[in-house]
Image (cartoon, rainbow, N blue to C red; front, side, top):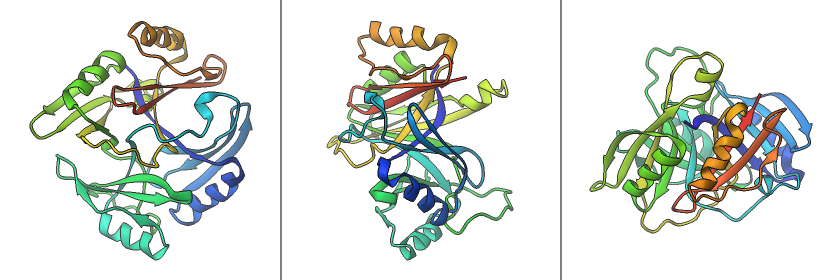
Length: 271
């Protein structure tokens, strides 16, 4: 099983420092460390409620870390408790956003255009018994919905993701044009030896318009001891992975593949 594990927000190399500052000042995220390695610069951003996201520069000679044309419609999802309040705040900071939509489970969501016109997806969820105070943006971390993927054929896509990535099907409605799948959370499994499910929604989009969302990359984790086995299994299944970037055995390594709709799916592994 490929486990959900957060992602990268990619920035142009000359805008790396400016980007890290923007996410701190506008969204209220905290940069806990910045490093420069042989796969480029990384800024590790602590999200206000929980979780981390990495600001990553388009650097290095690997194809996987280059800036390409948009490949598809894969959304890395962040959560707010009050979408209307968040959008009011963003408007006051001259951040554009799309109209609000509703997922099949009733949750409201929309895309916002963050630093350098980078597309992030925001989903509203219930606060529950959380009484903590958060930054004014209200964008506090990851939630019960982790990814949204736009596809042309939801049944074909669920079968592909089940076979190749090991996702589990929760609900499929061909008539209504959606599928709900889940996969384990990588941190809970790898660090805590516990099972926690992360949720992915597939939404039918017959037009399948490419958008400027390739800078925000959802990543799925596999462990170093099975990295090359899984990489070769994808090849045997008729999938052509990108060149491996980095060193998954001794540090960080990643690659990407494409689903039937040419959506870019990213994979990484690290000690």
